Length: 136
Image (cartoon, rainbow, N blue to C red; front, side, top):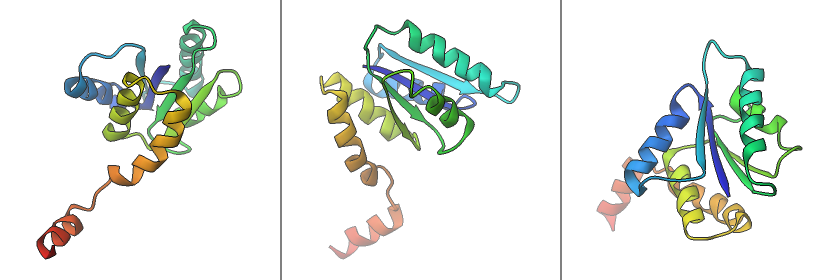
């Protein structure tokens, strides 16, 4: 399973660096950013070249930063050509969960089942959480 992080600017690269600080160096994971001087077609080209270099039949997990943003659209445009599972709304918790699921030897199907269930736990209203802790 190859993991591809795609974002506006440095976000994807920084997420990968942060994840590696927490869980160590990772293989088979790459990060791409779309910058103000870039064209979406350049990003699509880079993604297509990268995906083409992956082992034949290797499943690809794409995490993008923003629904319907240019990085999202670049990934969507390649979904018919490559075996891509695509989640958007990337955050560090989602990146870590994806990497740890893969490290645990779970399949992409298990990832597809697991990630949507984990998403509600990734964003916490801390004020509400603390209020509940104080009343318990």
